[in-house]
Length: 346
Image 1 (tube, rainbow, N blue to C red):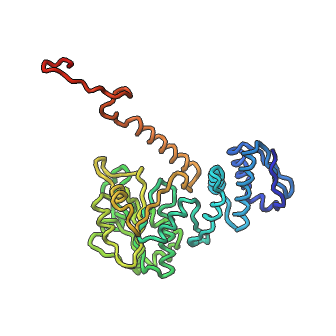
Image 2: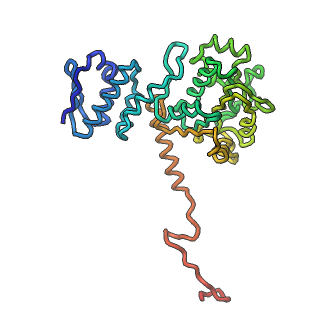
Image 3: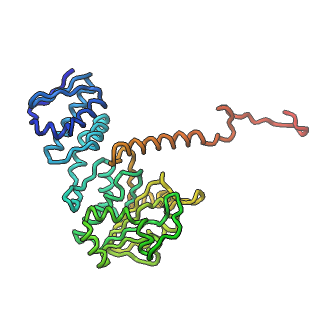
């Protein structure tokens, strides 16, 4: 079968095919088709189903390119995933949502349906929990929403916090004053703010006290009014810390709590405050939970493969070590046996 797209300028073909035809090769490899171009015509050759899907992916990428959206390998892979579910049309809805621009002018948008749902929840609710694996944009999108709310005078300050816990190692005593000691734990938050606001604007607002980056322990005893508050790495909080943080919230504030349940650095016998909060707070009006998955990873494609490989490994390990149900042996019910006083069967 041959599917044909006509009237596609060569300049537009270069955008959707990528450098050295990287994107076209990815489509060919995934769907097992052949893409051939001749002047302003694109032909897709292969079996009926794959050819139709490839045409739909190319049509989606063309629509994005016509809007001026940057086409990258993440968009190509996500379009391929959506077309298999017959949901490629939703890609255009995802890409239409602009949160803000970075200091260099790059637009910040949700890139997946999961991310769009997350952003919508932040906008519509007072408290939003964003839970998912590394690379799903939990902290970055929350930071972009916070900066946008701050610039639009929806809040008067931004407060960023996270528990100061090492990732599986003990760093010992760090040199310097108190700020120098906590800075390594908060560096990811600084990096995101530098990228969105610029170092100069960030420093100026921080000196005025309009942006605060502090360890979670500093939140005790405070009431946080008219602020956009982000609690990052929430999987490393204890239940007491999580309760303390959530009860700091005052009038006019918005809160985002982010975490990855698979990367806890708490002691093995310590329950995560994020896990407890999910059980306790689900169903309360004004509190939303966004569950991001491996499909929402927007870092290097290899990161998505790593996340999914670990998910598969952990699921298999959990099944392997699942305790046998009591009262059953070798998949068959154990027959209750009555015994006489001397111990023999009745």
